[in-house]
Image (cartoon, rainbow over all chains, first blue to last red; front, side, top):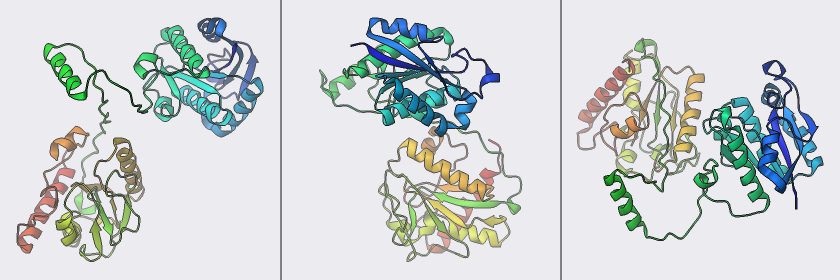
Length: 348
Length: 52
């Protein structure tokens, strides 16, 4: 059977115009436009680009829900088997649009979808878990080979063929784990890897180490005497009974403990909930994990301006980097909004 | 924990009283432990005022 393909492009690649046309709303053309020619060549006799949908990058960014609704309705009319979006290379707005429209087509219309963009495109981090994104790199020179990979992957999806590993098929890892039989047990594979390393040969780790995004250093505090200092911990401090039900490990959230007017953390009012260390000492005196008594003294002595009225706390054992990043960002946003100037984060 | 803190990109980190009591030391008598905590917190506040 011939597979029906709809191609999504932004205003530039759809040959509507450049930045001056980035405000145009969703539009549709029968048949192919611009990069669609390379897509059609890649599909060969297997598929047919029956329509091109496009949207201005700014319009999509500013009216995302509306743009998706309208485009999904129109895509459905074409009854396609496959949506190909982009490639968007390193264009952020275009990348987000490609990711979002693929995800919507897949979820709402149940059609196969493949987007293309650079792995560092913000659209990739937003959507790579939910859809297949082929890594285009940043250069438009890669247009044809990228569309070839997108077409090949798309055809496989439509035909419900087994999809190989990201490195083999050229898409960005989605964080999906599948069981498979290996020729050698782990110990032998590990020794093989070690020997390859010692020889200076190339080898591929089976586990991708997490990437940590380095932060920009905050400017030093200028005047401690007027500073509002907050206490934050990953030591799992909670109000007695853990009312917010934070997890003792693998955290997904944090708790906010009001401490206005509190001079010291009494053992009978606070607990430490944490699966990664022996909490006996902390439970006997919670100031050992969050130095509230000392900070209150320093506030009274005029060493600091004010101790922030809330302690934010999570149980940091075995935290997934992604969750920990999110928790950290949420806490930082709250502290910033509250006018906090400095933070002491105690870690167990 | 300092190497861990540095590895994940923390820019200001000081050694604490230990894993199970970062701002305390259960081996010290209570008044000495409070002194220890005050010194540690003052060092943390000092670090916040340093350029990194």
